[in-house]
Length: 401
Ligand code: LMR
View 1: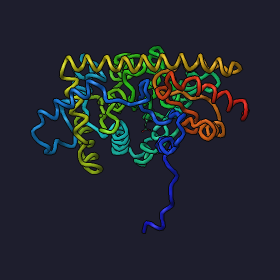
View 2 (view 1 turned 60 degrees about the horizontal axis):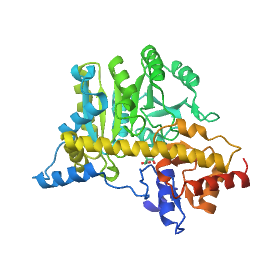
View 3 (view 1 turned 60 degrees about the vertical axis):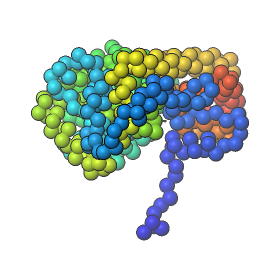
View 4 (view 1 turned 30 degrees about the horizontal axis):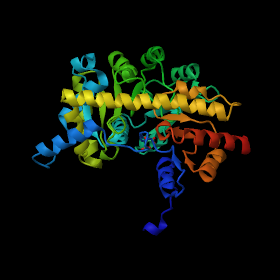
């Protein structure tokens, strides 16, 4: 049976991670997969997570099943982190949450829920979007389409184009948005732009499906949720997929959740019952450990304060790196303006070099990024910034577009 299968190429992001690991060159730099790194190039376990984990292990009395919906206290804590404790949708009993195996699991659950409600739904994603969005959502069987988003010439948002594209969508279309730290561009909507989009969603009865994988790493914990909180207050239905991979550093623990904001408590209950069935038919129940750690942090003032401080350190480091990298790039390749990188948020930016140049970065300089020239800003550090900038300059010189 298996001999008849085609051998598939590696995943575009995870493949770059594997290629980096296999490279023996001491100068190698990994700007590929989106994991945070500190000044030593390491992805440490957050101190608040270490402490919470010790407490979880000390107090845990059973490994018996939880449920398909997951840890109720974790779900509630994430609702409050996403929406703020006083959000009208929470007060109105319209929010339901299912714990998910990471943000990826949440995205797939959301897609399966949409399919259960209306299998003809089309999910519109930004151009470009995170490579795995297409696979995760398309894997449910739903159709995907694209809307205008990134303006490559300015390294910014083509907001007029986006408004025009969304304004033309058929009523009831699903629009996948990213709350903050847009993957792969780093180009986010401003608060004013979120406000301007709202009437388009209202007029077109569009369903926002918002992916928030980097809360706290853009402008701040609450600031990064501006669009979600606005849409959840003003629109009857919103889906939000959240991830604890980056802001809690829980990557391999697969910790995330899907929030459903429905028009009524009754509709929200129906959606949750469907989600429980969907989870049961795919993986039955989510892994517990990461959610237990997040619950512990969110329920303990000292741990929560410590965690918020650690998120602030990660955010500030990435902002600083953006500025330093652009300074190094301006020194190494003055003919090209990279200043847009300082106006972008979170882990990612597109360098704007072509695939042959990306490959030359890898082969000649051992600098790894995805083929679309997405770089993980957190992979830079004082010890490699100038090296990477010089490599970019050399590749641009030798392989002019
Ligand atoms: C990324 O985009 O690099 C991260 O979200 C990790 C992943 O799963 O792709």
